[in-house]
Length: 184
Ligand code: SF4
Ligand code: SF4
Image (cartoon, rainbow, N blue to C red; front, side, top):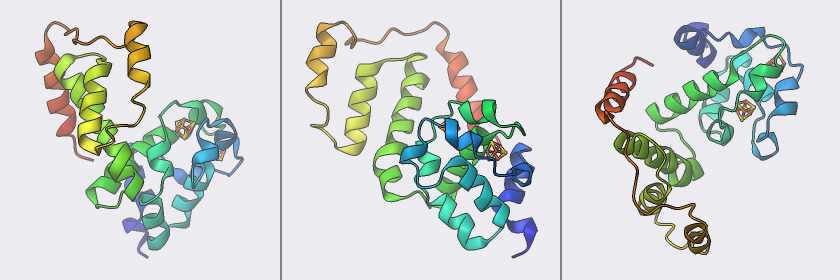
């Protein structure tokens, strides 16, 4: 495989993160709160990028790990080489979507949640849980999932029925417009 066409090369060009600097100490994965649920832990992701193999690149773009990462930045804070793994994960998610490679679970559950969350911010400028839940359920058709939680949350005032809108929401829309047009 021409090394100019590898994922690691594209990541370096797009984000400035050089996966070749990883020396597999494993500190990132040891501190990652989602490592136990990931098919590939963060140091494995780095190793897969170093391999520079077409099939391995595709496996990574189809993986569960890239969608489970919550960008908490624990890994980068522990990494002796300060490798920005959250930035890599973000690139991999976008690339996976662009190439139509997200796995079934990501397509059915995780991507709809990301879209519902972003729409909530786009329209209200802040958190509005009731709207988020309704939007997510409409997208996924998981109408009965966690249904018993709603009354308890309403009772404790944790689920306001109406959104509080921020002022100057056009600034938020401008941010969305600007970032959505960024080259990736
Ligand atoms: S940013 Fe992602 S990979 Fe890094 S520790 Fe957090 S969840 Fe794990
Ligand atoms: S902590 Fe840094 S150097 Fe160590 S395995 Fe993770 S990415 Fe590689």
